[in-house]
Image (cartoon, rainbow, N blue to C red; front, side, top):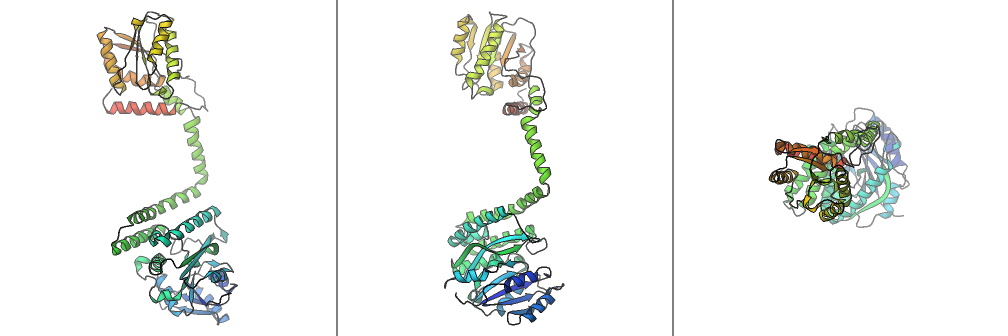
Length: 477
């Protein structure tokens, strides 16, 4: 086993609830060539007294210092502690985090001569309970990816920081040139700037260990708890560094980083909302699924689109109009329409038949014509309108002009059921000259409402409402 001297730097402020566990996790290390440097940032609770007892009991292992006044940051006590360190490496540990017993031993066994920075994976815990394992695995994947990326380009560090502070072991020579930034603008993100500068100076001389050797405590009152404030500072840090270097070759990393930092507080807010309101959220999802897929909602909406004005008059002109409904299943749609024609022909075999609609839908006009002729309908009574003017309004206008030219004043209209409302609204401007009657087709929906009813026409119904709205806004009615 190598014998590398290590100074463990712990900075504290009002950590009386946790400091014992933190110090004990160092004292219980299987690797023994270390010293503990504790710097108290003028705690107002019993933190300093607790540390003082440890320093007295382990005077050969622990050195305790106290700043003259509170610094309101982590950078100042850390820089103070760095000056007191004499060993080859410095290991950092926050005063509420805990090391696994073999943490230092494992890192020392992996350190190479060129190693300047060594950090490991970690797990999070709260109230002595390790937090969600799925988050741990997700974070591990991110650490692996970004540990690789920052070796290629340190600016990926701005998008995601894979370096857990309490896992870091750093060669002391680094601090001949570098320190934690003590500016008030860097409070809470001092380590991010330090990691960036280390990578800038020493490139890829670091080791990442996937093995979790540190437990990081999550608590509400800490320098990192205000994500909104920290986000603003992170964005400010990233922006200032890009402005200072005046090199925008990797502008996409900058943009990704700013976007991620900006959206992270919102994502955390949403996650917290779902955690707090999980039951209501699940019930809400089930209600929405029921409302959309199994409730009579779309049946009611669809019924409002149905227009049926057939009476006992003998009408001698029938219009077959295809709509969007059968664009994907043309044959099926025209089977329905042909069946409708057969039902009408039972009562009147001497009628004029007009067929129109979308050209891309009506691909079998001749088949319909031949079927009608085989039934005995006079070819002269059938007219197929091939012109497709791109909208129902223009198609109906063209139809109107054709009917007027033939002195027709009343028609029997057959179309897909949910199209009838829109046709009726468009045709109202022609109704003084030509009245229109709608036929109840073979695919006409049932009027019965059921508490549980699966609707297969949701897209068509929604499309019709949007089309009616569009026609209304464009003055087509």
